[in-house]
Each structure stands twice: as C-alpha cells, then as structure tokens.
Image 1 (cartoon, rainbow, N blue to C red):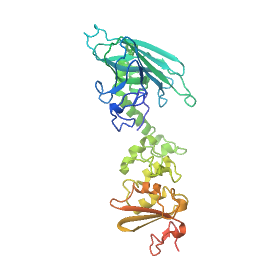
Image 2 (image 1 turned 90 degrees about the vertical axis):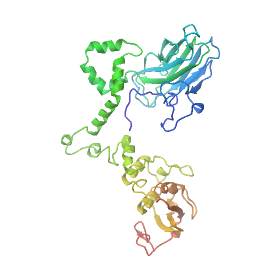
Image 3 (image 1 turned 180 degrees about the horizontal axis):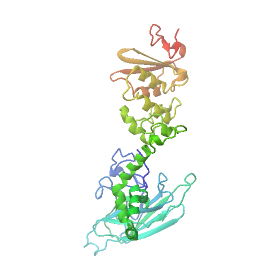
Image 4 (image 1 turned 135 degrees about the horizontal axis):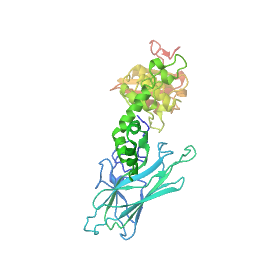
Length: 412
C-alpha cells in the first residue's frame, strides 16, 4: 500500500546502499553490488565491514595519494515522483575514519559536501570536520527545488563530497539520503502540535543548523506512521452515509475502494488479493517471452479486476470452470474452449481454435500463453495438455450435455 511520504529518501535503493534489491526481496552481496557513486584518487568498494544500520552497507575507500583530495560524486539523481517538487532538498550521510587519535595528531580531516540542483544550477556547500574514530554526520545546506513541470523536465540533483587531509586510512560512508527538508510539516500530528506550542519553542527549534527544527523532526519520526494511518482513515471514511446526496454520487463513494474489485484503489489491490489466497499477477512470462496476462487484448488493469473477482488462481482454482475461464482470458473472438479428460487417468485436455489462440499456427500446436495461464489454476497432481485445431477438426463429444456444445452453439 503506497502513500505519499514527503520525508522519504529519494535516492535509488543501490545508491542509498540498501542491502537488498529495489523490491526489498533479495539480499545483494557487497562483492556484486553496483552503484552510481564515482570516485577520484581512490578505489571505491561496497563493504559490510563497518555500518550503523545492518540493512545498509557502506562505501569504503582509501586515498591513492594521501596528500591529494578524494572526490566522491553521485551524479544524475532524478527523484522517482513529485514528493520533493516545489520544496527544499538536503543531502546528509554518516562518515567514519578508521584512524585513531595518535595516527594524525588528533586531526581526521574534513569533508566539503556540495548539493547541486542541476536544472537551476543552484548549489550550496558545507564543510564539516571529521571526528576521530566516530561516525560524523555530514550535511549539505538546503537547496531550493523550485516548481518543475515534470511533464517536460526532470527534477535532477548531484552530490559532490571532497575529502581532504584524511591521510592514508580507510574511510567509510553510509546512510546517504536526499530528502525534502521540510516534508515533516505535512505530518498532521506535527501540524496540530504546532498550533498548541508556544511560539518561542518553534522559533528556538528553527535557529539550530544541521539540522534545524530538531525537536519537530524527532516528533515527526515518532508519529510518521500514525499520520499515515489517519490519512487512510480519512480516505476510507471521508463521508458518513447520512452525508451522501441521494443522487449524482460518484462511484468512488457508492462502492468500496477497499474491497470492491471493480472500484478498488490500485494501492489496495494487492491487500485485497490476499483473501483469494494468491498474489496478483501483472505479468506472466511465457516460454516465448510474451506476457500471457495481456495476450487476449485485455489490459493489466482489466486482468487485475478479473483476478480479484473470480479467484481462479487462488481459492477457486482447479475446477472445470477455472480451467475454461483462464483459457478464455488469452483467447480472442468467440473464445471457443473444449475441456475433457483423456490420455491418462490424471490428464486434462484443453482444445481451442487456431484463429482465436495466440502463439499457434498448425493443427496440434500448443500455445505458450494458454500453458502459462493453466499452470496457475490446474488441479494438483493433474497433467494439462493443450492443443489448437481448425474449427472443423475439433473433437466433438456429442453425447454429453457439457461437451456437446461449444459455448452456446450446439455441435453437429
């Protein structure tokens, strides 16, 4: 379920050094990790040797020439949505020097952090002294994003960090984040708290630098998910029944956007599908690299509605009806489909018409799209066999009420 999150990190999962892929499903080894970070005067690697949060790796490097600066750059940062549009952006991360106090006479060097709005060329820089043997928080100043027409232009940033006087020792960087600096103000709990706080507390909270509004941001962190829950509640119960007009009501009010398959909000579709006992399929790859979900001319949205309404991949799988209806999803035209046992005791045959079936040409051909769909609904322990034939060659079983008709047209 996706909700607006104005304080989320807009860096990609790998540029943020997250230890799993973007779907948060597979842990990536540091040895095979790929990021967009680049470096000069050092060799960059991704490491789990030193970290703050075990879900995030660190960038590790050591200067090739200790007397020259090391420049670490993350170019072409394009946020994936509009959460940060027309706002203020700030970059921050944590940096650790591996030296101890005796090795450089008590100085661990410094970091100059520069954040640039590529579209407007606006940039700000802040220099921070590194603490010896401690994780130091590195900030850029706030940079205005401006209002960008994202239909014509991208919002784009770059980060450049220059390390000087760091000696010939290992440096670690973790938790890099680019966020909407004042996104916390959209938290309804923060908004309501602000109304009841004496003004001098708010003003005092603003005075601090890197970060300012430290108290308010802490309050936001503690109440962020409560704010999301309140937004969900307002969306579910925007109006009471006695507040609805008697006519002219939009479908979004007349039908549930939470549990009605026809009108469910796309954000809730995966949640609703759990009651069918199966996940939703937006793509179903076949042996010939096609997507069976849309092979019959339906859209992905149409297929999702169909999956939610009928549950043929879940609780209603394995029936004769499920086999026929899943087959028809990939067919065109009259969607003729004949299902009957044969071949062996645990074999089910599915026959379709060549002209209505994707991926077939000759009599007896098997459609990869049909096979893919049937694989999600076949009865356990049964083997499914699909073949396509010209209409005139379909096997007729005339003595059966079920198989003696093709759809509603009697055979013979």
